[in-house]
Length: 415
Image 1 (cartoon, rainbow, N blue to C red):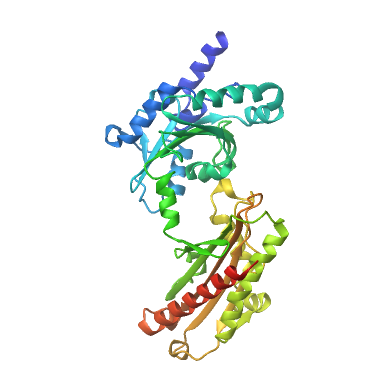
Image 2: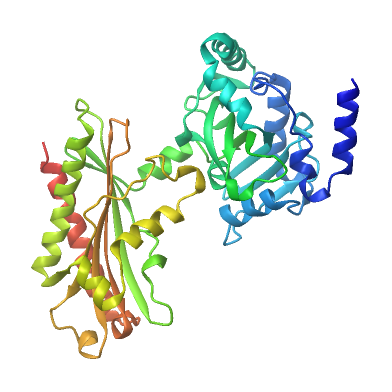
């Protein structure tokens, strides 16, 4: 009792900056009591569906400020820290974001790595039966669709990955459809060490998304870029981030494409065999650029003549990933990154410009049988070749579109 009193007194005396996190940090075991609190789940879902009923406040501490800066640098998600979080989460920080028709709620409070370690080390004897009961009770909630299961870091919300590393958690489908049109997750994560303070090194989190995060809306968006290629399925991307390749102060124009590859109908293949298959598709793009009289530039030449180090590109790619994805084999750059320079005479080259082409791959996701990785390729015009000239733009578009179709044709013919 006296310890509890001293704890409350200490919390009241802490600076406001850290109170939101540090005052909820105390010795406790992992509590599994969020998804099965049926009334709280229903009330939180109702709040999320009526965003006009909430009052927002500014970020109040270093973690909240970092969260907003990392997930919404462009300011398009309408971030809102709830001044009055849902009743079940009064000692959590709760961030609501909006994207098109999608509403997301991400609530978190301090935990400790000791709790996470206790869970992992004592799961069979201390937590296994509790988890089973927890998920059964959550699935039985009237607001749920009957689907409750252990979660993986792939299904954790982006907001979590921005500031912490997912350790374990649980998913609950909401509504009566399958797949669910709304979902909820409860879990635990290790905080980015650069954000830790006042003894806070881990987080407990609860997230909820509705109106676009799962179910039919996600399938609809994915289907819009889906193509079948024999036994293969490819998903086409055009929004590749080329900021890392831009040179400050120079005109830059770029056209990039990405192809994500899956295979659903054949037995699983070993990881090394899948990586070799991906490399064979990358070689198609390499050959196409060679046919266009692009010269492949060696790593040594690039570093000596331009200061451009391919290994730095890979490092920058890793650095641009959310903190929670780094080093988890979530996204791994294939080793055969290739850079080319155009040798065929182009008017913009004659005026002092340059055209570079790049081919890179993302290795197949570990332990995901259907995933065969991604191929990304594109051209970058700099200087006079980076100016918005119709003839140059048409050349870029035609070259990349033809390369994309050639790769898809080879994917279709792959046994």
